[in-house]
Length: 252
Ligand SMILES: [Zn+2]
Ligand SMILES: [Zn+2]
Image 1: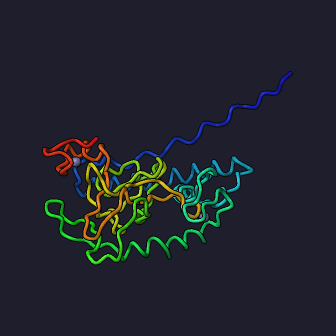
Image 2: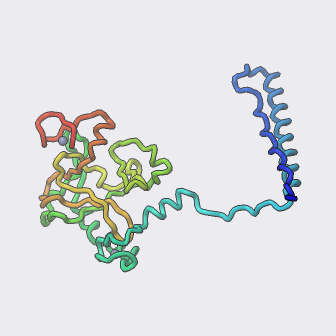
C-alpha cells in the first residue's frame, strides 16, 4: 500500500491591512486604526513563529548575489561575439587584450578629437558641435571621431521606460546609453538628414561602444551632424528642418 503524506497545512493567511485609508481621519479612528495595525502585526508574528516551528529544516539563505542591474551591465560591456574584431588591435575574441586596448584607444584617437571640436551657437538648433577653425588638418573620411558616452541603463530596468528623446541611444537592444545627465561632447551633435558623421556599433577592447566616424572628409569650422533616426521625430511629432530638403520633412 502506498503511503500518502498528509497535505501540508494551509499557509497562514496574510495579516489584514490596517484601517482603510479613505476613512475620515478623526483622532478616535486613527487610534483604533493603530490598535488594529498592532493586533495584525502581533498575529503575523505569531503565525511566523508557528510556521518556523513547523519546518524543522529551513532552507539555507540564498548566497549573496549581484543585483540584476550589475549583472546586466557586466554583460553589456563585454562583447561575447567572437567574430567582431577589436577596432584597435584588429584581433578577434580572446586574442584582443581587452582593457589594454581600450586604454590605448582613450590615449589615441579620442584625445586627438577632443582637441579638434568645440561647442558653438547653431541658430535655431541651439548648441552645435563644430570642428575648430584652426584645425591643423582636415578629418579624413572614416576617421574615428569619438565615442558616444552616457549612463548605461539596462533595457530590462529603467531603460525600457526611457522615452525616445535626444540623448538616448539604444545599445543593441540590451541597454540604452543615456547622455541626458552624463555624457561627453558627442551629445551636442545635431541632426541632419544627410549627416557628415556616421554612428555605428563597434568593439573596442572587448567593449560594445557607439562610435562616431567621419562620413566624408571634414574641414575646419564645419558643424558635425548625425542622423537621429526617424523614430525620434515620430515620437515627438515634429518635422526635420534641415536643408537637405527645402521644406519641413520627416527623415527617412
Ligand atoms: Zn583589442
Ligand atoms: Zn532633414
